[in-house]
Amino acid sequence: MKRYLFSTAVIILGLFAAGFMFPADVITIKGSDTMVQLCQRWAEKYMKTNTGVRIQVTGGGSGTGISALINGTTDICAASRPMKDGEKMKLRERYGSTGIEVRTAKDGLSVYLNNANGVKELSFAQIKGIYTGKITNWKAVGGKDADIIVYGRENSSGTYVFFKDNVLLGADFTNSMQSLPGTAAVVNAVKRDVNGIGFGGAGYAKGIKEAAVRKGDSGPAYLPTAENVKSGVYPITRYLYFYLRQKPDGATKEFLKWVVGSEGQAVVVNEGFFPIN
Image 1 (cartoon, rainbow, N blue to C red):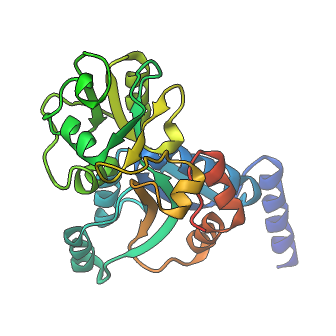
Image 2: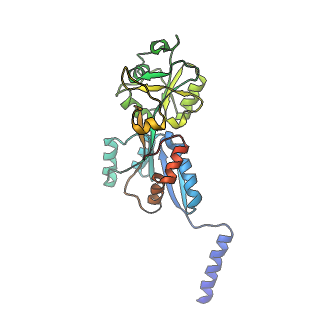
């Protein structure tokens, strides 16, 4: 018996020496393209000091992530919009729970303009007019006489849904909008197109300018700065969420605690978003 135990110990030590590891705790995150880069940074930083955990991140859009959560093919759904009541009911039907919501960051949803565009600010009514096709020329909003080229996200995107619900107030997007797969693609399109306009997360606003936005037809317009988002004066502010089927435990619980803690929130700031506290 002693010889058998000794042999087993030698085998285990030999496996470690050869580079073999026992299976890690695997956490899967799927969903929001707005959040995919942020989630990747969270995963990279967390795994550096938690070598027994492996975190897999994929995008596809908030709607795709919510479907994966309902179907049981992801542990965590990343969503740039709140789950809808119908989606929560599907979770309840399958798992007996409407899910767990975790606020992970705040985002100032930006309106992107080309750097050469002379327009500096837009009202909600003007943005809605542009994205519903009622305003088609920059001259109508204080710009030059040129057609407005409208860019946006695909309908599986949480950003698309949030923008439609909160800026267009439920109205349909114009048929002329060019739908692109991911916020980075929208930014790149506006960067190349002097007459383009787009929308997306503030953390992606690089190489373009952001329009100052005002809620009403008069009064001050605000840029999505950290101060304006924190105080609530920037009018297109949202939370970025993690959703789970059940109350987390084990490795998932520890990872979520880290995300909303000081280290995880420092990553939020580094990626151009805003902390929850």
